[in-house]
Image (cartoon, rainbow, N blue to C red; front, side, top):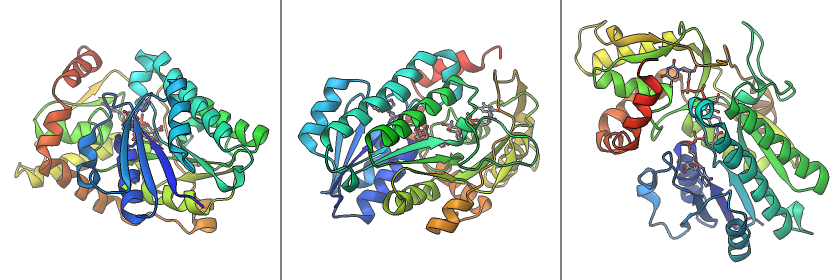
Length: 351
Ligand code: NAD
Ligand code: DAU
């Protein structure tokens, strides 16, 4: 019987959608949001549910073993949904060690705490690890990532996520801990930190600033609306068998340059600009090192076994997302003040 769930990284982009969904849809569960509140964590993402009786926020670092052990002892959770991570590829190129600490050491700390607390009752508990399609590496023109694709990570970020996936499987194989893993494609939607392509482009187009496109803009990503990812996590958490893995994706591949052109034309209309005006902001810049060319997810297993499919089209999701950013200027201003400016000039000046 699941009663209490620790959701890690719940103040981040995807985590906040997962926390909101579980707090709202499962009033009988106690949800503990465990988050360090790094630059990417923001409690403003959860304003609408922060007073709900089944929600609690705990500030803490998953790298801190003593703190994690104490928290598990005190709270006696029945399940963990683990999203806390350093998540931005460009930052991993600048500072790989931080990614090893949070993504690898932090994950092993949580696995260990769960293993110790749940001894003798693994089949009644659940450790859900949220991972990425980037662990599979890069694709040619037509193939797709399945759950059987061999791991081939290229960035320090994806190497750290691949390593954490291996540890989760090792805890299932070695100790019998009840684990599940999902590997998802690129998400987009509300509360997305504007270091990632879609929110960064919306922000810059709105502000009439250059929109940086890496290399020739020919890299392909498979975009999924974040609320569909949160729903997939809900389905997998409740229905997947022990030790299984599911890929999650949108069947929605876009070349970066085509996506940026689309955003420019949506914003031309919404901001009453002449057609083609925003596209003048597109600026080609030096490519990302080790830049994976194409990601595409085959999510057939999730559809056939657990009945999940995306609920909205990309056109609908993008429209909702652009509108959300246009109507949430205060949120955007808050997250783009202070440290963001330093990050932005370090990342993009003289690129
Ligand atoms: P995010 O960067 O928006 O949020 C990460 C959250 O983790 C933040 O709230 C941050 O404060 C917290 N955190 C970071 N280090 C921590 C630590 N040491 N201890 C406790 N909390 C810490 O990330 P996101 O985009 O929401 O991604 C969430 C998860 O989903 C990650 O594991 C990521 O690898 C995975 N994922 C992301 C995408 C995507 O498109 N964004 C796609 C597939 C999988
Ligand atoms: O595939 C899932 C992954 O998607 C997640 O695991 C990561 O946490 C998430 O950050 C995302 O990784 P990407 O590297 O694909 O996302 P990002 O938004 O950084 O970049 C998307 C594409 O756009 C990529 O090809 C690089 C390019 N890009 C990105 C930025 C920030 C640009 O051309 N210009 C930019 O300024």
